[in-house]
Length: 266
Image 1 (cartoon, rainbow, N blue to C red):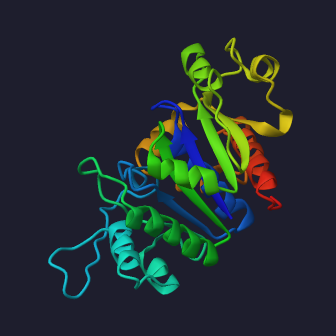
Image 2 (image 1 turned 90 degrees about the horizontal axis):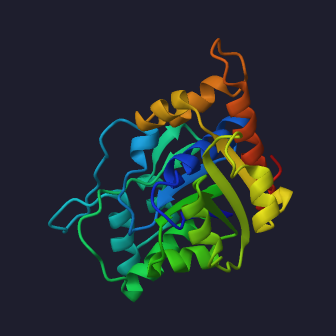
């Protein structure tokens, strides 16, 4: 099962939302999850979930070390990619439950050659075989590689900002996807004019298609410091002295909504 996160504009919380949802899957329901980013991304996923520097891997006979994703793409291009190689390239966040595929910072514009597109999808397929759910951050805007991933995703999660311009830019040209579509409003504030009731009424979004991740400065601080999973693990049982009940209830409801549409019981 693969779930792709994407937004029309930058700054919609795509990466942090994906990391939070995956953390709930791993900590609440013990699902084995793998997180990764499309090759056109900035490689900033690790900043939300892991503060340690990226590990590097190398291949005999190669002149330079490659990060996890480039290493696997190299293997795919040379018809050497295996499930074992995919697993070996993953960095554990929660042992046996949550992993991410490291990727270095974006270096320069890249032409999406056929071998790259095929290799990226082959990596996703292998990751699916060794996990319960694969989460893929496709970033913002349309590009050739993201188009392929979004077209083949079982569920597409559209991240939205709670402001008029962002909403109109997306819904003014609402895209068609082959998989099921879920909308998430990041840093949601109920008192805003553009609340859930407004979105359902104006943009005709069904109750089973809309989730929110509430505005929460403590969560945002934790996420920016690479502690998304730690925050979720600490507060998911509601036993922490800090009152994060509302935030966690909404985050868990949003995660259940995504899993339900993916055919997974949460």
